[in-house]
Structures are given as structure tokens and as C-alpha cells.
Length: 158
Image 1: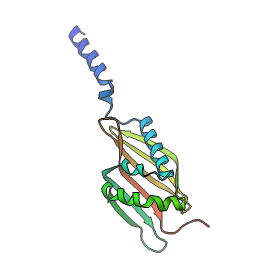
Image 2 (image 1 turned 45 degrees about the vertical axis):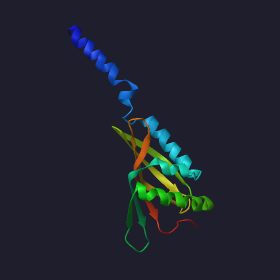
Image 3 (image 1 turned 90 degrees about the horizontal axis):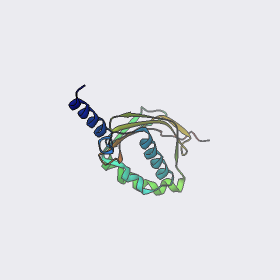
Image 4 (image 1 turned 60 degrees about the vertical axis):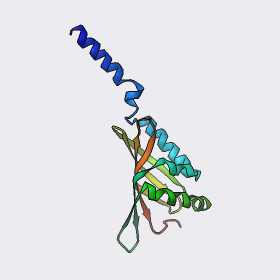
């Protein structure tokens, strides 16, 4: 290999591995940290959780009724944010928390998909289809760009 090619190859390797070049791609560790922050904010009913949602996020909630077909509600992040903020005080009063298990994170470029089992304490129900998608921006921060939850109309609690 001639010297010109060697220098260009070395320069490409160095530039491709700089933080600036890598900042856009998601990684499992930072996605896990983001998800842990998300869970903490929800469990403490902290309104800062609202800011984690991108205004263009696609929020989908599927509710199962005992004697009716399932109903699906779709909202944008801009629609979801004020509803979420308004619901936090009531959720705190009822201690309505979710816990997550069997968390699996997959990375595709700047997008991380987090799948988990979400146990809803208020309804004694495990949503095995929970999914959260987060996108990493050029500055390295994440925002929620999609969330899907399944809920029950009736409680399973005794």
C-alpha cells in the first residue's frame, strides 16, 4: 500500500472514531441510562418526564375491554405532554406506578428500541407488548419518538 493510501486510511479511522462522528449513533449503555432516568421520573411523579417526549412522538395506547373490541388511541408528543403533566398528581395520589422487567434494547443507527414487560400496579396487570423508541440527536441527547402501551379497562387486582 502506498503512503498516500496509508495516510488516508489512518485519517479515516481516526475521524470515524471521534466523539463528534459517533455522537449521532445510539448505543445500548446510554439508551439504558436514558430508560432508567425515564423510569425514575415516572416512579417519582416528576413532571420532568414530560420533556423526554419529542413533540412529534407517536404515542399509541391499546385498551382491552372485557366485552368490547380493543380500542386504540393515537396521540402526538405535543398532544401527550399536557395530558401526562395533568395526570401526574392523580397518579401520585393513587401510587400508580409501573415497573419494568425483561428489558431488551436494540440499536439501529440513531434509534434505540426498548421492549419490556411493564407491570402496572394500579391494575395488577403485565403489559408484555410495551415498547419505547428513543432517538439520539447530534448533541448526544435522547428523546422519546414512539411509545406503545397496552392497558386493561378493568383492574385485575383482588
